[in-house]
Each structure stands twice: as structure tokens, then as C-alpha cells.
Length: 342
Image (cartoon, rainbow, N blue to C red; front, side, top):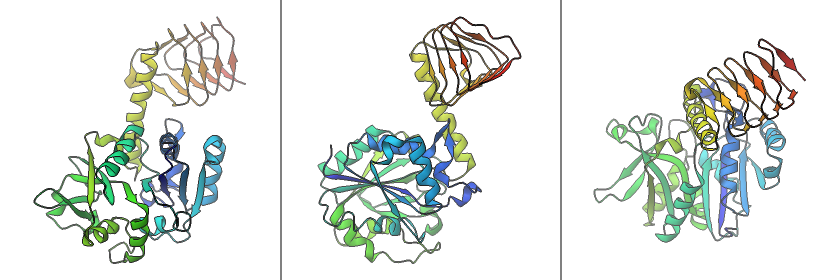
């Protein structure tokens, strides 16, 4: 366990660009809560101090996490941000929890479901190795619109971050972006947060301003730049949601195929992240498999079939049918055009 590491997950925002009554982090990707991917990834880091900042519809967020990730629920301390005044203000709410903490603090948003454990480990290791006061996880993308830009000096040192809405025309041409994931020295982080001022167009206290404050005081700021920009895609609207779902779906199908499942046409197949399928099963185009479905070995899942929360034994054959909350015994053939509900 990383005793000198604390992790803060930001999940208090409304997600207004999603145009939804549902809190942004509760939208689903391949059947799983968006924030579930983040929580599962950071839990693998082994830190004993996990904090989840909640705000908008906090009861709903807490309830869904408890329902779907009970083994994680008790591992996190929920911290309430009553006024949604930005990321800097959100992190400040954990000050009393980390008042005497001497290690480093990893801060991550709850809307980056594609982030991988290895990337976070790399960030923390680089932060410690370089003895930085703050280290920013960055990447370079062709279309950096909506992301904060990394400002560097002529000798390539990190000078700060400027948000999209506050960036000048020339700054908007910068393609190296802030992922919204950071590693800070805990002591200097909480010394700097009260110095952040609300002087931006959104009327919020930006966590990015801590970087500027630390830099102005002569502290060492680093950047851990990764090549795979897809990992830090933030989900801000339905378009981002669809893009992320496609990427996760590709990983799910690849994992199944490597385990011996034949998927005839991955582009026309949808399988939730929670589904389990045995080897030598064949999945045809137009298939949609959802929820806590378990499919045995040597099955034939024919075209235009929908299966949800069901259990199929070995050697089952089904096509052009809908199965929901049902159990099909091994070596059973389901008549085409069936609708079976348990």
C-alpha cells in the first residue's frame, strides 16, 4: 500500500453540457457507470486514503456507487462540496482530512474512464523521482478545443496552464493539453489553495491557478507527457460519451477474442463490460449482450439476438431472439423469433 499517497476524485459537477438530469459521472459506458471505471483504476494503486468529492445530487451519486460497487464504497471517504465553485474549491474541501498528511496527492476527475493504472503509476513515480512540487499529466492532441493548454518557456520548462475560455488566440494554437490529472506535494498544495482568486470568466476557483502560484514562488513544476491521448478524454457531452464508448467497446471485444471467443464482425456487435463468455462461442453480427450475462462454451449466438442479464449453459444455440433475465440449459436450441423473460 502507498502510505505516502492520497487520491482525490472530483465528481461534484453538474455536467451541464450533457443536457441531462442525471449527474454526469452516472452516465454509462458499455453498461458500467462512468465513474466506476475511474474508481476501479485508482483503487488498484493501493493508497489507503481515497476521497471522492460529491456535490450535485450527491445522494444519488453515493447511492449508485454503493449499489454497483459495494466493495469500493467503504474504501472511499465522501467529501461534500456544497457550493460548486470550481476544481480548486473542491480540492480545498479535503483540507481537514489531509491536514497532517506529509505525502503527495493525486487528483483526478471522475469523467476520464479510459485512464490506465500504469499511466497513474508513471505520473506518481516521475513526481517523486524529479522531486517536483507539482506534476501535470499532459498529452498532445490535434484538436485541443475545450482543454487547458500547457504553457512552456523557451527552454521547455512548464510555466503554467491557461484554460480555453481565458486563452489568447496564440495560446489556443498550443496542442499540448492539461489532462486534469495532477500529483502535488500535499503541504504546498493546501498552502496554495487559499491564495487562489476568482478572476476568470466562469467565476470559479481553478485548481490550475495553484500551478501558477507555486511557479511564482520558485517551486519546481513538472509534466508527465503521454503518447496515448485517448486515455485522458474527458466526457463533457454526448459526443465525448459516444467516442469513449466506442474505445471501451473495442477493448472489451479484443479481450474476449483473445480468450477464445469468435466475434464475426466487431463493428456490428455490442457487449457490455460485465458480460462473461466462454471459449469457442461464436457471436454473429447484430448481437447485443448486456448486464450480468454469462454465456458458456461452444455456444452459437446468431444474428439479431439480444441477451440481457441471462445465463446460458454450454452448447446453447440462439438467433433472432430476445432473452431477458432467463436461464437456458446446456445444449438447448432456442427457436428463432423467441422472446423469453424469466
